Length: 594
Image (cartoon, rainbow, N blue to C red; front, top):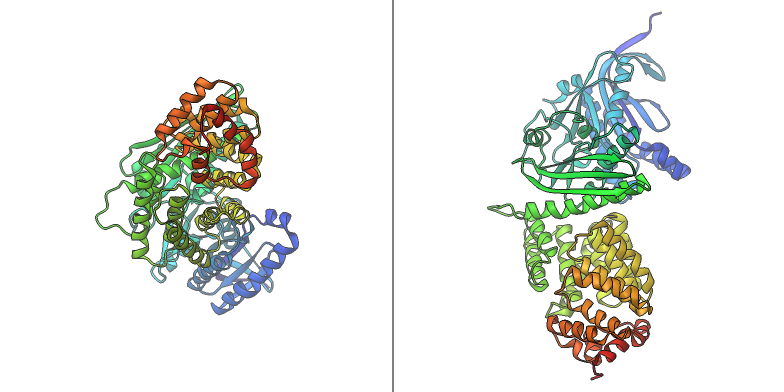
């Protein structure tokens, strides 16, 4: 008897990163996958008149009489998985990749065979985690029947299939939880998102295969790191790598991928040194907005890769927000106000009181337009509490109270919101509850490992909590990741403070002089430098630095020990160290007690 053949819609799904998940937690991963299949996948397949052909260990194979039902099932499964994963950390999420094809198969009771099945499996492998890829015949069958957008990923030569397969990524509007970024959408393309970028494969300027891995690693890590930035849309790596070794017109690329910015770069190795170039381009105008060159000795390529990608991601966060905030907009929306507020919050070229007042105003505008915006609440709380910590507010109690309320609302709505955890830490620090603040800073950093402000603040909080030596690694990391940051003067200063308090006077002078050279207009490092010079019996230099600190300070704190204690009180455990070092040096410089 000839085999039973039929035309069917084949849905193939697997779990992205299944081996890694099983290696980390074999039993837990198996149990969670089975729960997803039992509670979501199987009921959805049955609801849409499909049949689970078989489970494959790390996924499943299903068939449908209707290709419309198959696509609808895939979309609703991915949407359901996004909801189930919302409260789970990215590294622990079970995320399906799904491929769908329509083809003729050989059917048996517990399996189906043929090229139609193989193509579905290959499409599954091309999908991003949480994404869906379909063949051209599937796209043609459903595009006028379902409200989906299809993104043409081009023809792909896939394993064991003779002819290239035309691949389309799919997402449903307006719920982009499983959206795949790709090339030209076959439906209408809206204006590019405000923060949208493609990281093109970094060029390998040498012939060393190890260097190619390094270049590709930078591209992949940057794609991941930029995706962590709130509001950022980053084109998936599979699509970006399709442009490798092709002539690029950035404006045309921007239109194809519907992005505002393009990042490109190159890697060149010479002996024991490597040079990485990166440049950011405005895809609308072709204008170069930012460029950086990194020259390093090669000790450990992976450590170097991590450091370079972190530094680029940090710089791009600042550059993109600043560029978008400066674009003229006739009728600002919530995101416009958030971008402008973030730009003002990070502006250290103006007096801090003015910058934070501007940031508060923009975040309040955003909250007026959308009272439920978690981003607006968390950012407004951060700006309010920054006014308290920077001592530029006239309403300490009300700013702390309002920030605390906003943080509670933000975390209730989004427990994994990095800015909300940071703001909660800042509130606790302003209240002097350092042991409560430290884990909140750590939570913010876990969600955004490149956030230098949170890294430096964690070190400062540990200093205030009495673990003063633990402050140094955090400041050093912040300096390494963002060496041109306007806040770097504070990081140098804090390291110098620790060394002075621990009676390492020579080391203290080294770091405090770095702080003074970085920004001679900041009073604090000069006061500590005056103390350090005095302890070395360099009284003339100490007197000069003290006079400069008094001149630059906006109050009279450096005119007596009592006033300094009142303006910047130290924790009891730090004060004991300060008495023998910082205050002793100031007394030698001539600062009176009262």
